[in-house]
Image (cartoon, rainbow over all chains, first blue to last red; front, side, top):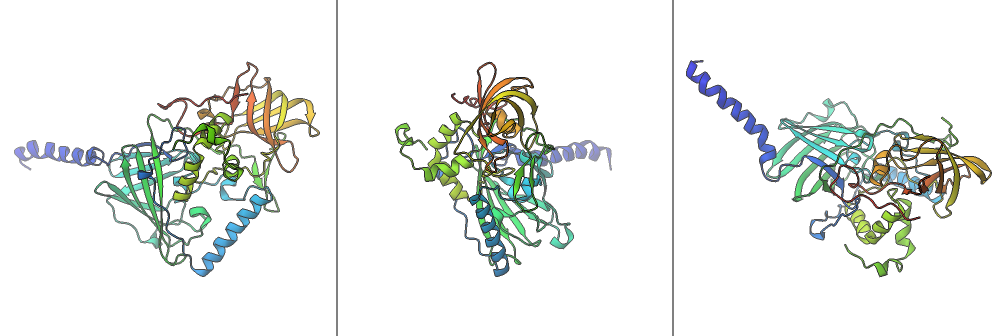
Length: 253
Length: 175
């Protein structure tokens, strides 16, 4: 490398790298960093119907999975009817995993944009998912099944497209929907207004679903919100031998 | 969506009940707000199909239709997740028990409703309105609590309000 090349080339390289890393956030519509709350869950949420999320498409499951889905929904309804809390993994303080973690009650999520990675942290149960930017996705069979799987992302204009595979079967699906370990989650995340974010989620699962289905989550920006710690250290709810959710009382531990 | 105040009372219970049961642990003052926009909230839930209101568990094990008043001295406060707990030694037994456990929302949800981790302390004399467990055990879910200085706190607030936000703090619930 000549002196001239070093003198000119290295600063140019540095500038190019800085520009690339800053590009995602400086491009209008690509700055989605910050805290977001599921829409409709917060005081003062004024939602313009023009930016309301579209309705979900129908869930069409293959027969074996449809049966499982119906059994779960029936059990849930019966528990509620007899005055019990349905026994879900969350009762035992297990995290939700993908895709349910993206909306847990009225708890916010936080999106962090750094070079090469977007990180999403949820307040409920402090769940963390990492989205690797501009990298090829791994074959499903090479991803150890887990709660968050393996996510890769890329910007398509002002839309962040995330592909996630490797979610284990025991992780609860959309509204109790069962799924296989072959599930693929495709998200299209974009600002539909300066402070409104949509996450269009498409679930594709050739083992469980007859066809992919899509639903959209809407979030409202929470300026200056400080995420609160959530460590599930004192869980008084438990599931008894009859499968009913009980609460420990009187200082029982 | 703005719904006139005068229309609130006319709304049927079929709409109120699911919202009450999955109230996001909002205090009553906030509940009025939520009900004021209930048509929208319900619409949003239907449209998205995924805005679940359960975090850790549903509250169907508590009887929200027959509130119980508990007066006594706080024997412990646990400012923890997934729930905050207050243990109370009663001055007079209620439903045959002199000691009751009160479940609250999570610290995050309570902070939105104006709570601090030390709003209630061991030894405080308090009066709480609670929803008791349906199974008859002396456990309950807080509706609101009156502190020794007369302040009344509900069971949390909706998202995005309170410390660290630019929005107005949640209103304390009325007595």
